[in-house]
Image 1 (cartoon, rainbow over the protein chains, first blue to last red):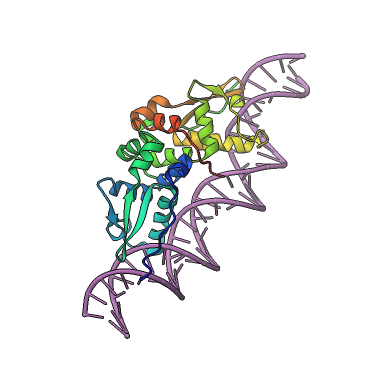
Image 2: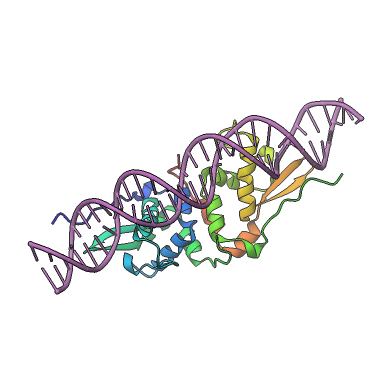
Length: 110
Length: 110
DNA sequence: TCCATCGTTCGAATTTTTTCGAACCTTTTA
DNA sequence: TAAAAGGTTCGAAAAAATTCGAACGATGGA
């Protein structure tokens, strides 16, 4: 019962601004982050704009968000619990997350 | 004397959040934006971390910043005057530019 | 006028990201 | 105990970004 894999996360001090910006620069990843503002969600509850994308692709999007420090990904039964690393991000880059998440995106990247 | 090329710029309403985030997600481009906070600069006065990068590469970095709406690029004699589109960005994404530019970047992307 | 300066653009090569199927692992349920 | 559910990882293929030299254009000065 050696439990689900513990995935690597950067610690707060290791979170890089440009890496975070990159993670959020993709519409799909930004949309995921926005779904997490009201609290953690299991991965299956995070919806992509295209529901037919393979799970490996979805997993990769999550990986970019995790390794950048935007999202925490922990085992939760056989599921994965995703949460915004709000405290870490607010401490490291004050105001950034709020401005990004509350921004009204009009033009979309194709 | 048909004057230097007028390069295309997105209008305020066309500026896309994810595109702006992408433009700023590169350390070199972010550094350029930061050099413009205190006012416009001619291109030759914007320094890259590596002074030996070819001008075509530098021009391309500027293009990404311009087409995303982060920077304005206008003819100025035989030079190019670069300026931050602060008003447009503040209007479109309140707080974003301030938080990004004032953020203390620690970890760098290689 | 001629020429050096300051930048843009083009195309090709390289590098980085993204996408996806297949294989695998753990937990829950039958 | 077997099988299904929920996800990660790997490798290869496809797509997108970056880099750079060469060619070009406009401006300002000699």
